[in-house]
Length: 486
Image 1 (tube, rainbow, N blue to C red):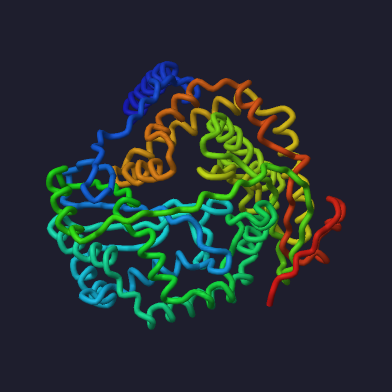
Image 2: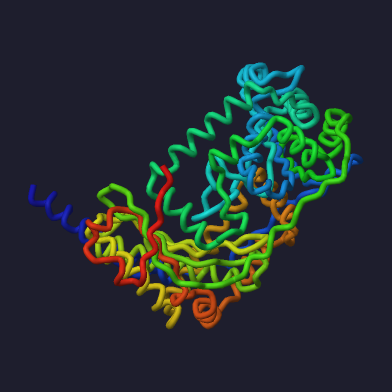
């Protein structure tokens, strides 16, 4: 027995000795060096059709599936008809055509497990990077298709019917109108929705990006308006299509030419986005809501998509509030102070005007002013001093490493190409951004913080019950009280 114990101890010592020796050879993760990240857009072909439609194709023959996305520029409706784009898109799809009523479309597509949809483009953003809501309008409308290759002729037939000869039945229009009106009546139920909407109104003033559908504008829309909208914008020479999947160029062009043979060109006029002055005027704004929490949104106008300093601003904001748990705002407000589950910032950009910079949090009522003060202090500190070398290096590496997921789906790559072409931006913008970020210096990001953060021009907006706040909002400045409509 003693002999066995002795042998066991010897073996244990040997294992520990070898393990220690091996451990000395293993580097700490922070010391590891990785090869330079190289990402390129998958090979694609540009498409030009006789009817004026243009687009892109990425072949992918791994599985027998086809994805398609088509985008139409639509501009914005008149201010007294806001909601027209959303109502038209929904009714075109769900009203179907004379030969393909909406209910029949739903049954056929469900049977083959496919979809053909009409609506906002994927990734379309508004305040805080989110959709403008079910009753708003964007500058474009999209058509999306996903199906097995064997069902592609069926889906193209349905798509053609919706594009060329939608029925737009009155009963479907009224059904959707009632849903939109109910959404409008309920839009003050959600505090964060109130905050985003009202902040947009302040930042964009009378610009169309601040327009919202109301009961009056939705009620004013007629079937003739929907017909005019469809005929004005749903034209092949106003369409950009992106295709990925198990098809060749000859195959898909032949199928589309056949399916869309009756789709006629027409002159398309899209009003340009009105000019928006880039101003930074501070204000403190308050909306009463009988809740036990305070919603905070603090920000100013952001970037135009073509701004050459956009990559540096993205890295700066990643450090400030966009980098999840590693960002300063999240670390301070959530982790250190324990004031909120979520606290972050976003610095968005817009291809036609300006996006927004918004820092946001939601906390208990008696910590609302404290959380807002912390966020403002962090914005001031970042603008004045910029990030540290370690923050910069970590943020740049993390941001670049996340970009690999931008290329893991050929369908997503095609959608991005379609969006970039529609916006009139270079198709290799993502690759240019990666190269720019790889070559950024700490001084570049410090300069971006100094130029693109405007702590003296912050718009502060609070939603909650100010009587429950631990400090009066007047400590931040003169308070503008926003009354919600009933």
